[in-house]
Image (cartoon, rainbow over the protein chains, first blue to last red):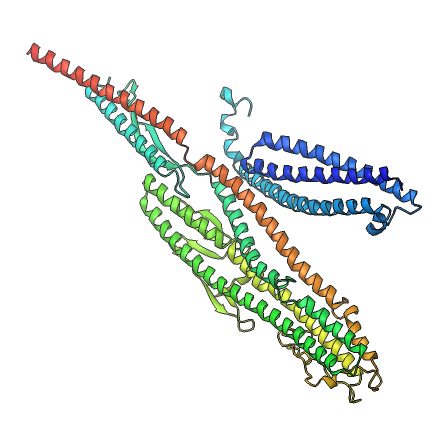
Length: 161
Length: 465
């Protein structure tokens, strides 16, 4: 097994951990913007979150390709290969590093998953607030419609209604 | 045309109006840190004009009281989320106690006790005639029974604690609804005194907020500020000046308090607030954990007894029950199996380690040890079933905690919005104060000018006469 390939794999995993940590930080900051209803900040956060997700997806693709290459080089079938089997492809030093990064990844993923659950709960409930406002508006919109009696002549400011 | 005295009257009314507005501003500023206070605005209206026949002349300003600034839609959402938050909080508080019972290090140690018990049979298989190994099996069995008993008893104790909280919560609900009925009556009797009504409405919203923490409520303004309050499923709580108290009575079959409204059992109708969270924990989550624990105990008891009966003891006699058999209170129910689990034998020689009656045979001891690898309840091994039970409780608490956090954030969001609308802004009040002060000074100038004009007029008239 080429050491450069295994090191590259570990490096990509480290970048994935780092990106996930930034995503977690972003989710925390974005929910603060949500509680302040700072729409401009929310827009910026969401845009950044999108780019982070794209980055993580790109890393996943690259990791997938590399995993298949590493397995093929060892003459193994990449599909259905166990974690232990995959770690076994690395030399002792790299295997230790890989395990450490995978542990960090598991912890970070768990934290981000939790933050994401809370965030989606926040969005769901904010949506409910908006729905309540829409229902109230729908209920009262009739009051502000032009009355039929006034249709013969209208005030200038009613033109757009 | 208005005369000088008419103009003086307009100026004096203006002075009084600006004075009233300054009082409102002062009241707002002094209540800046009062929880639940909604800022007030003075209602200044144009006084009815003097109609002199052909033309109408303006007649100044009138101070028509104050109005609290409040967004009812926002208040509704705050109430909804408050109900959710308190439901989740009371549920999580109760279930945290349940979760700690199943904690491997701080809990009852059930997982270790299960493993130790089955491992003791494996050790016995090394030397089936060893009295110390046999004694170790009985001790491990007693430890296992004790762990099940303790877990079952503690679960029941948590359930009873939650039941007491249900009664306390119902008392608090009744106290709030009585207060709200009293406030309804006071507001209705004010008949247009907007300033005092505003203060009472603030109190009304404060008590309503407290009630929303306890139970799900649906509020209808029945006119003149009087609120009709029911639960979301229609249980009446307050109508005008009347409150409808909830009562509790022990259920004969469970022993726990059921909740009644005017003679009807409404226990299962609550959907939010602290009460719903407590009822969910008491009537669903804890019974589910208790039932799973009973099923696990029953599965182990039955499997161990069945195999012990198949083997032969140290004296070559047919084996009997190792544990006291499960007493089923009703067909298919294992209720009480955990709390009543006990080892049936006291004599170590009665352990049926042999499968053929010979003293050195260990086949049945190995079979007994192998129970830990076999399905004993719901097609799962004892360890897997217990792990699933622990993870179900853990996931349940974890998802409720996450939801609680999300609700907390939404509440902060809504309270921020409420603060924007109803909260007192010192900057805004300072600007208003300057505006009213200027208007007051201008009105005072008008009074002074009219005074001078009147003086001039009197001097002119005096000179002429």
